[in-house]
Image 1 (cartoon, rainbow, N blue to C red):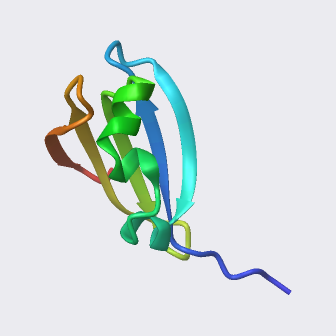
Image 2: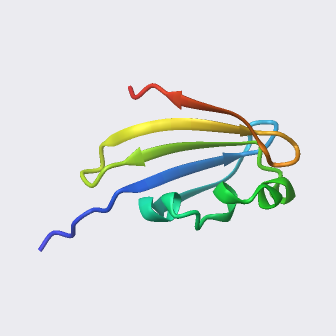
Length: 87
């Protein structure tokens, strides 16, 4: 029996020099429900030195449905949010 895939968001978290601090895959509902501290808490981003997060949203078939990048200032506040092309 095949398992139904869920929609997920794959995150690539980077510091000011562009080095990867971590990569995570989270369920789409966690993304939208404000349940992820790196996404929803500027103090956490500041403490961890996060300066950008790139995300790829995958649908239930595993196809890319959207891509984006959010850049943050030294205080963890959103500076810029950019929708990226799906190639």
